[in-house]
Length: 267
Image (tube, rainbow, N blue to C red):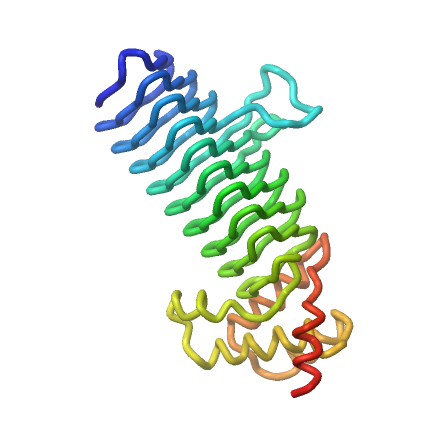
């Protein structure tokens, strides 16, 4: 374990084996840091934070910060959990919840690039990548394998489905279903074909997903009728997951792009 002499580490913090803590870092009490982690200079790890093994947290990040929420008051015990093998780059901020015993969670093998903000009560699943300057409001849920490009704004309580990809500079105001690709305005433009190939999805389910996305977003049907058509015949589990995500939405689903709708109508 290598702790720089200028670092301030609470005696109540639990530091694992082979952890490196850089100059002027601050580790508060009730913090647990797993084995083989790297904590860079000027990082602050707030109280009630747990960091899994082999994480790398870069300069200026603040993990477990108090939430930006009027309902928070000093003395609330709420938690921040970071999984294993996760990388938090420079000036990332992750805020804990304003309510007792609730959690903000960042999963395993996640990459949060510079200046990403994760609002209170958000949950980021495993293998998610979020690029520079993207901001997640409170209570946002990002499912496994999703990719968010740079400069994105995600409204509080929105969900982004597994293996979805959000284009740069988008503003996401409603839920984005799994496996979808959005444009720069946050509207669904089609299926994230490259992402599906990267996870090894076979061509059959990929084609079925493409047809389901076309039916839901680009055939001019309302949501209920589109789902009925999608589920009117036997469908693979991937398409059922897509349909279930839509049915479980409380914020509603983002729209499709007008250009793609015109293209679809011409086929």
